[in-house]
Image (cartoon, rainbow, N blue to C red; front, side, top):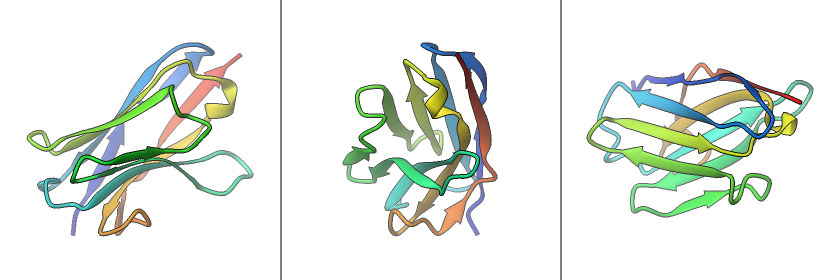
Length: 116
């Protein structure tokens, strides 16, 4: 069973930046898809960004140009660099990994709060 642990969340002012990390308990080299999701209060969980092990990435329209997903296979860690944050980015952010973007493994989540 793969364990994923997020870190890096916190409170930031609008316009600021945060970098989230997702550390895996095993090699992520063979994990076909790793992704970041988020869930804001009263809303459904939504896909933010995904990274395939072949290097392909995709982003939600709402974060394109502001967020960057990356993975370091040697550190078994995935990252989400978030710039130009807005209050609408406030949510619990989850990382996932598995054979598809739906995810077979999930982290416990990290809170990101953006103040106006």
